[in-house]
Length: 387
Ligand SMILES: [Zn+2]
Image (cartoon, rainbow, N blue to C red; front, side, top):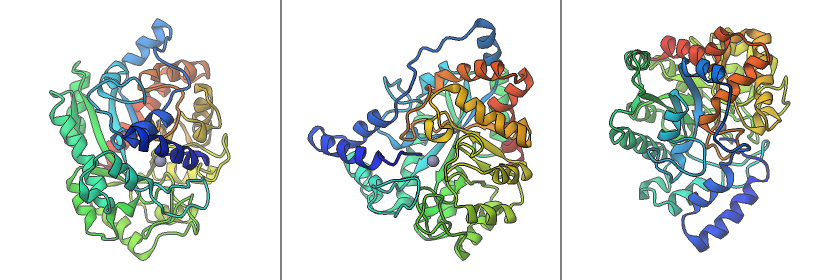
């Protein structure tokens, strides 16, 4: 999830409207999760045909936060099952957000007051989610499990290598099943108890971002007031995550926490969504050194399709960031990290990935390179890292 400095004010306005209309989440969802270009998205037949042959993996989408039903096509937002199917997506990583500062800015956030407690109240989340970030994470995981159970086999949770291989085999065999992986945005969701990582693992989480929009008791955030490194508890968390083969996501990490995790890394780490300072110089985006460090672990840099990641509103801006990473460390570390439904406007919704293929071709990427970016790289890392 990424928001502009003005978002706190917009959310305040939305909450005022919501107080009158009821359903604050639905209002904020419509207000923030827009697209710059409305579907349908047209590309040449040959480009479409090239796209349809790919296994497409998106490392970050936040639909579980919202009131929409994943199984039904919505007239707004970016991701739902019908659009994932239409968009030929093989695997969607679902980000889970548990706490968002009311006055969010790119820099210097305090953790409270917290917008998600208002959302939990307004959108009728279970009572235990009002005070517990752990319960908010488990609630969203439950929501995904419920939709998977009701999807008639169209969606499947991926928690280990065997399930990943089964998904790939099914897709290669022509079955349009879509895989889902759960990603936690911020270790504040442990509610201060390291042992809660076991409950999150059991609920299906396999990717963990250590910090999100503010410093927490495990790790500092790029947006925090202190931007500190790993705390002793945070170091222990990193060790446990690696023991459990949960993948570490360094999107939103403070520079110090980033470096300390890299120094401890025993396998590939990722930045699931965002951009690079080489094309969009903000304190949230990765420096060239950070891109090299991620590549050094064999990991992935997921590039977004939103303005705060790429400093632009077009698909060419996303390709510019991908080209920068490819030139710096090789194409095998470039991945999709849309941040769909992450309280951001995006260039397109999940049916628009063929537009990216068109732009990658125009930039001179080969078919093999495009296959790697769309999903090949992500599948390589998941195969290596998952339990
Ligand atoms: Zn995020």
